[in-house]
Length: 309
Image (cartoon, rainbow, N blue to C red; front, side):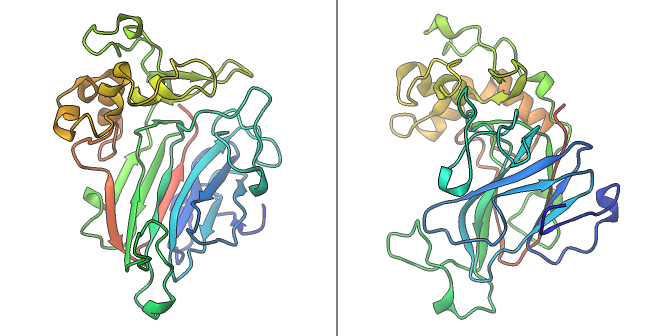
């Protein structure tokens, strides 16, 4: 195993007690890579941003700094080369300076299943030493609260499960998000994104993202993603503000949250699939106000990614 990765046996039931704030587990019999990017000013991690979990039950404990970590996105790579690049699923890219490359056919659209968020500053840290929040216009420091999600507003790739291991009133019901049976195989093959017939050219679209290298399914587009992402030249490549995309991307303005929730995106084939197989997760912008969670800084999260289904 790579440095920092430990073998936990045959399944997550045998994992050692988690002391780190964040742990990723391979719930797949095949090798998986854990990839991440940190937004500008969000802090640093000593963990490599492309880490191999070679077998079922292997796990990675991520050493979140006590002073906090902001704007960080983690996602899985599947069927990758020995550097964690050229993945058939999850090769959505990152800066070359961080070790990421794109295949000859180009990087995948950013539709990955993901865990993303800002980890708050621990109460034990002197407030003056907490990380400055890069999104704060007044240079405020991170509070003692985590803010995280596993949004599917862009799409999804691998099934996953998130367990919140400590008490969190602002977390998901039951302390768990269970998307472990989320089937890529049920990604809608014929979706109507015509805005009630106003744009008939989008009345019969496959939501399946197809890797141009091997022509195999590599994920499922969300409605907005299907209309706007053009990395593999299989989407219309519209802007979210374009008339044909507005009802599915809900840019505000001009689309209000209430208008978005009453529009076609709320009952689309993709949204229906996500709500059925992956409750408590955003399927589109303004999706019932659920999916964004707040927990005390120091809360422990266990994230398991599974083989594509």
